[in-house]
Amino acid sequence: MIVVFLGPPGSGKGTQARELSQKTGLLHISTGDLLREAVKKGTELGKRAKEYMDRGELVPDGLMVAMIEEVMPPEGGFILDGFPRTVAQALALEEMLQRHGKELSKVVLFEIQEEDVVQRLSGRLTCSNCGAVYHKVYNPPKREGTCDLCGGKLFQREDDREEVARKRFRVYQEQTQPLVEFYKRRNKLISLNARENHRLVSQKLLEVLKDGG
Ligand code: ADP
Ligand code: AMP
Image (cartoon, rainbow, N blue to C red):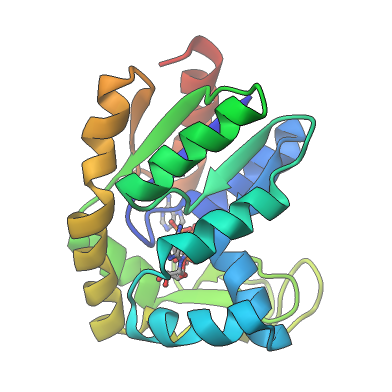
């Protein structure tokens, strides 16, 4: 199964992708995590991507497509979390999958409003070591400031500050939202109410993936 998670930043894609990956063995590919790793390591890609990420803008399509080409596994299913984010990326993905004799199974749309997303992002805590995600109110760690999974230090992402979060939401509306129509036309889209609590969303997600929506 090859699944795309589509939705605004903060809609819960990463949280659900991690859990689904643990439950099913599907590989979780988060372009945001990969980029942050590249920035941390100071690679050429990281250096070029950082300025866009800090401003809440999208990293150019060419860089993103090359990155996905590199990490796409030859065998087995995967979840794409945060890619594609533009029509150009979606077309490149289609071409790439076709070339490898693969097909996209489903695209899950995480539906949520701007105010909910800003609240979620402004309370999001991320582990500096393993990338696990928490929320100050909705999903607090057992010990303040410390990751339950690996003991790493938790921090607030720079781009989760309110003004950058709002900018990222606008960027989503302008550049990524057209993918809703794109995938509807291809009969791949399943919508999910992402405002529900974590447990309900994950239950619903399993259901829609099982029966194809
Ligand atoms: P995305 O990957 O779409 O940017 P995340 O999975 O990182 O979103 O979630 C954003 C924030 O919202 C995190 O702090 C996370 O703990 C919290 N969160 C995720 N799902 C829910 C939910 N169903 N209800 C409340 N908060 C949630
Ligand atoms: P995320 O962790 O998914 O919220 O992504 C963080 C940032 O990484 C985004 O604000 C973009 O700057 C960049 N990014 C992640 N995925 C993509 C993508 N598919 N295309 C362009 N930029 C991306």
